[in-house]
Length: 610
Ligand code: G6P
Image (cartoon, rainbow, N blue to C red; front, side, top):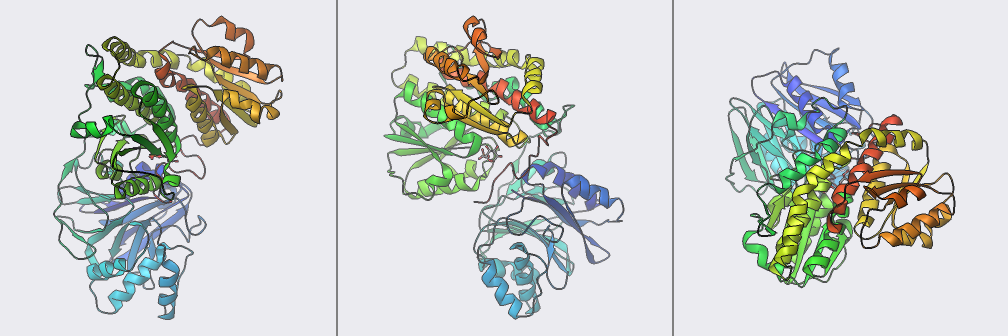
């Protein structure tokens, strides 16, 4: 949520900031801006809308410098207009700041500063910080101390980078709640919200922790806490390559990410599947496996698409391992008083590893003495670092705002964990081998579904003008229905709801008529016959049925308006195959409606505010 980038070095900062912002654009895209130190002055350029608009206006400005900061915004306080866009300045326009997060006590600070003569230009909470630091500088503090003392008075969350024309040789970065990573180059250093802007520039990075402040010059970087204690930081190495963060010939990141799923799922399983033993090996869980195995209760917490993966995990773990599992929205978990003890285990699932609610939920669980496991995609992310143990997805950077490949990798990881635990409990080796073999075949089956691309595009053409959709499934296919509906509404702005198929009779059936397409996820499983009855109920009310069905199923073809066939697999792995046509359907409908697929309105990839 909001992307930040900073640079200090010997290259012209403008293209570096611009490219960095483009790579962070998935974090927010309602306005963007740059501040560059040029001729001892801070020059600021801000624009409403995407980075491309900022880029176009740059052609008319002769902006050049060697120190600068940039921001792409997802508005929290103040409408997304040019004035409210970052970077912000104080009264004197000597100091410029970019901020991600929310300053909770900004009104109190603002009133205090206004009484001292500070004139505010924007409706944002972030501008308050500029005046606050400026006030301390005016009172004789040096820039670093002014920021440090100022921040100690701030309540709320921040990831911020600040520059000052009177201290032209340094940038200050500070973090509480919103991620920041520092990229170490030769004679140059970078600061960014995540590693994407650093790729191609440097592989050596330092992650700031909450409560830390970094002073970054072109040849050096020093970190201390906001309370003024020294901190020594480890340099970590990132191994993302450029191809992973580029579209590689696809029109959208979302399509690229859908199409790469056979590969990303194989990457998730690589080295972890022990087919002959019918089990898995998960190094990240290591010594903490026992607590998971003997947990009295497992709570899986997550948001959005990750929450849908969690539901599938619940079904798998209860069915095969026999541990009681509950799935909780992280936003609810963090403010409830859930009954937890040291025999409860919390699993947090998050693609980004930065979602504010999920992070708060794991902190709450740790306070209550639970072991906390993380399932994250972004290596080195806050959730990955704050959990006791965990499993990475290894799906590579996901840039399309609507999550696709992370979802299938999350479900894959949950299947790997389930298999490991089930085998340590009562699952037979024969059954374990069957599951492991079938997991290994999934990438090939997904490839087959992806070959149906053209057929799904035609179905999208037929239904693109509908105003509502219902997605129905039972058992393992119920979370698939939820995820299919979420994909459609996120990127095409068509109202879509997912329901357990049988629940349809308790409400949604009232909506069914010829203008209500109903997507049934109706692959062969133990409750297939029941789903067929639900399809009949829809047909009887003239609803148009689009069915996702198992190859060779002729019965469905008699009942559904359109059928998308998928290869058969075992019940617990059905979601991995069945979600693929629904991702493609949502994608094609959105493209045909002219929607901005990778950056849907009002959404952001990484929700780092509450
Ligand atoms: C946002 C994204 C979703 C994502 C959710 C949870 O809403 O748009 O795609 O599923 O956050 O994010 P996480 O990174 O925690 O999985």
